[in-house]
Length: 220
Ligand code: AP5
Ligand code: MG
Image (cartoon, rainbow, N blue to C red):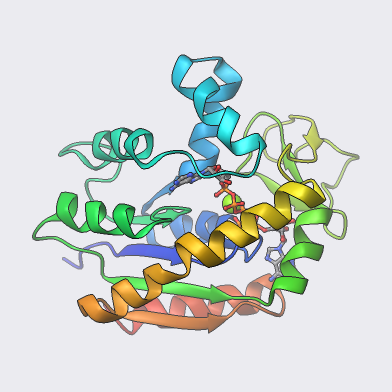
C-alpha cells in the first residue's frame, strides 16, 4: 500500500499555506496541522498555554520554540494526530524547529518540502483583505472571495472577521520575522537533502493547488 505523504509547506504569511493545506489534507487523506490555528483555538478556550501564545501572536512575534516543541511532540507521538501522513502549515518556522522536527520524525522523515513563492507586496494585499471564521480560523475567506451568505462561515456558521494580527503593523513585523527566522529554513532543507520544491504561488487557487500536487506526486 502507498504510504501517505509527509509534507511541509513553507512560504510567507499570506502565501496561501492554510488555503492549500486544507485541500491537500482532503486530497491525500492526511492530517493538517496549522500551529497558528491550534494556538488561536487554545487562546479562544482561554487555556494558560493559549493565552501565553496569544501575547506573542497579537504583536506579530513568534511563539518561543520551547512552547511550540511541546505541542509538536504530542501531535507526532505514536498514535498521535500526525503519526501517519500529514501537511504541516506554519511549522517549522525557525531552524531550531526544523532540526527538532527531523529529530522527532527519526527514520520516517518528511517526503517533500513545498515552498509557495509569492512576492511581499502581494501577500501584504492578501493579508489586509483576509477574513477568517471565529469558530475555526482554518476556514479562510477574503474580501474578494467572501462567504456565500453575508459574513457567516459556509462550513460551520461562525462569524467571519478580520484576524487580530492582520493589522498593517503586525503584518509588516511578521514579514520581517519571516525574512530573518524562517527564510533560512530553505537552506537547511536544501543542505539536508530533503526534496525542496519552490512553486509559483501566484494565480488562481486551483492552479496553485495543481502545481503543489504535481510537486508532491513527483516524490511518491
Ligand atoms: P499563522 O496562523 O501560521 O499565520 P501566518 O504565519 O501569519 O501565516 P498566514 O496564516 O497569515 O498565511 P497563509 O500562508 O496561511 O495564508 P492564507 O492561506 O490564510 O501564525 C500566526 C502566529 O502564530 C504567528 O505570527 C506566530 O505568532 C504564531 N505561530 C504559529 N506557528 C508558529 C511556530 N511554528 N513557531 C512560532 N510561532 C508560531 O491566505 C491569505 C489570504 O490570501 C486569504 O484571504 C486567502 O483567501 C488568500 N489567498 C490564498 N491563496 C490565494 C491565491 N492563490 N490568490 C489570491 N488570494 C489567495
Ligand atoms: Mg495560515
